[in-house]
Image (tube, rainbow, N blue to C red; front, top):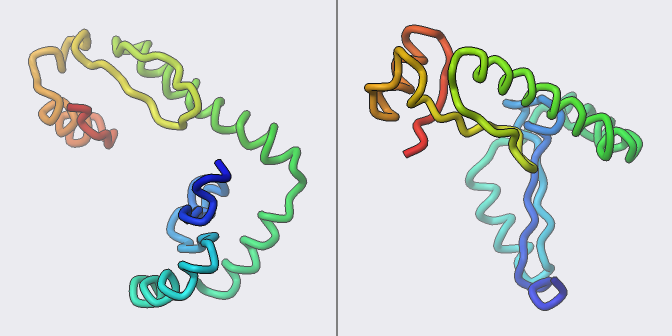
Length: 137
C-alpha cells in the first residue's frame, strides 16, 4: 500500500512467534517523520528488556526464512489442531481458524455449559475445569 507508506507504523514483538511471552522485546518501524515522536512516547511507556533477551531475539530473527515460512506455521497449526480436537471431543462446536492461532468455540451444546451466558461459562471453565478463556459476546 504505497499510498499510506508515510503514515503507517509497523510494530511487532518476539512474544508470540518465539513463544517468549514476557520478554518485552519488540520493535516499531516508522516513517522518519514519526520516529522522534514515537520514541518520546515509547521511552515513557516501557523499560528496556534485559540484554540476554535482546541477544536471544537477534539470534531468533536470524533463523533461516524456512523456519518462519514452514516450521513456525506447522507448530502453530499443530497446537490449534490439538486444542480444536479436544474441544470437539467434549461437545464444543469449533472450526479451524484461518490465519489465526486462537479458536472461537461455541459452548451452547456442552451439557454443563448450555444454560450459562458467555461470561458464566468462561468463569465455570476457569474455576472448575482450570482452563482460562475469554467470553465471546
